[in-house]
Image (tube, rainbow, N blue to C red):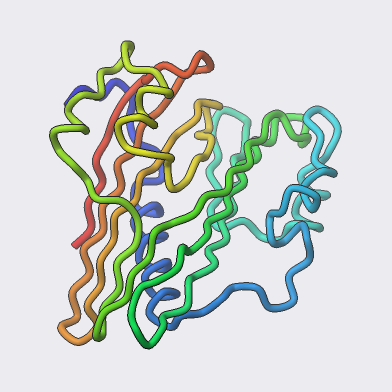
Length: 212
């Protein structure tokens, strides 16, 4: 598979998967006493304006990021919230929900670029186990071509991505997540298919991340 862009935050992506599975295991809904900004809702993030809002204002309202990346005088703040579906007596099932926010802070300490994303995540439960995300079909994945495949084609092949986020360069990265956990046997199998797009929506690179 072609890959013309090095993955960023690979380890943290896999740690995120493990944390999602841990939440699903406890069937926890991460709502609590969140404000609209902390829950990454559209209305709660309306205050963020490129070229205007400062880093301290983002931190004050949204809180500490899930992940922070620095380089070339910029800082990338990445937030995600996962709202797990509750298991039922009869088994599956509901969708879980993911919300994500990427904010690039420039050298002037103001927001340079931001991207918000929300999606549903298919979730199922078994006896001491849970699965979430999409099924990775190698035949479909192998159809993705850097500098050729467009975002619309990706969605037709794989369905909507689980998470969208910016990388530090400002390119959009799309993650399709597949994760399974069996707590009786202590086994976790997690995969992320990560695809980077340029501003025109054309694939820059592809990477499969695995954690088992």
